[in-house]
Length: 82
Figure 1: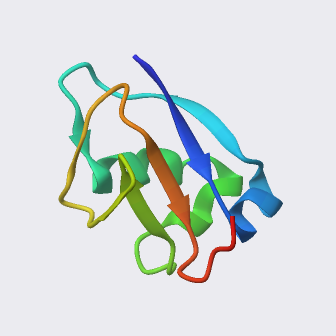
Figure 2: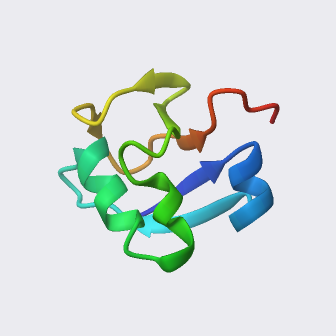
Figure 3: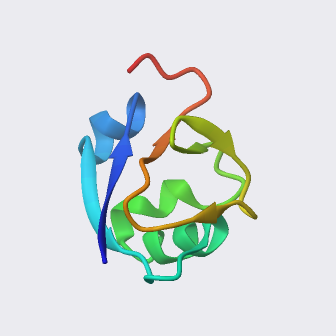
């Protein structure tokens, strides 16, 4: 199922404000989603250890957090201004 991923701060400046990606119907972890996203050459900055934070439904999460289709998913730098 297609889910919209939002990008803020310098990520938005570099790659755009949003993308749509497929997330399995039964969901996945944030870590699995990051691995899927970094396959795109311009999204390598999302790799673990790259300093980008992730949120699900406006709550900052770690890579073991569950992600389901239809949730609000966002990535941003720690000092993101929007």
